[in-house]
Amino acid sequence: QVQLVESGGGVVQAGGSLRLSCAASGRTFSQLDMGWFRQAPGKEREFVAMIRWRGGTTYNTDSVKGRFTLSRDNAKNTMYLQMNSLKPEDTAVYYCAADRGGVVRTPAAPDEYRYWGQGTQVTASS
Image (cartoon, rainbow, N blue to C red; front, side):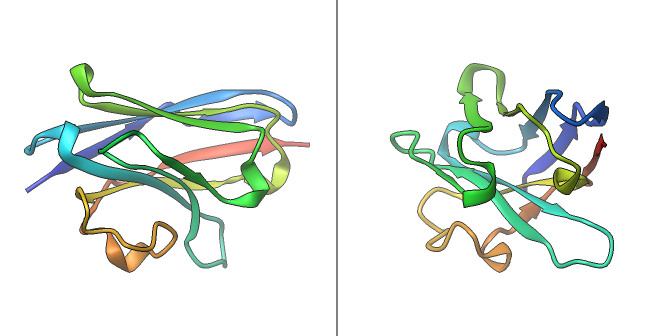
């Protein structure tokens, strides 16, 4: 089993920045593929970014490229999402997701992740 705990959400003005963290426990963190999804009210859960355990390859959805940066610190069992130039349309609950390395074939497919956190609210006000 893997437990995921998100933190770092909050309310910022449009153009501001936040850094989300996802702390993992219960399994060797360095062998997990990990990602972020978000869900706005009335909308489906949407892929944001993902980082592979092997090689650190990252994937981002087009709407966040150039603004969001994904990284991981295996020594701290933590993944980070640095979000800059936030827009009102980034407002959502952000969820951390993970599964064993190599299990996730399609990074943008939420059904391919076994483990999920409880979510953290991000609000960018205009």
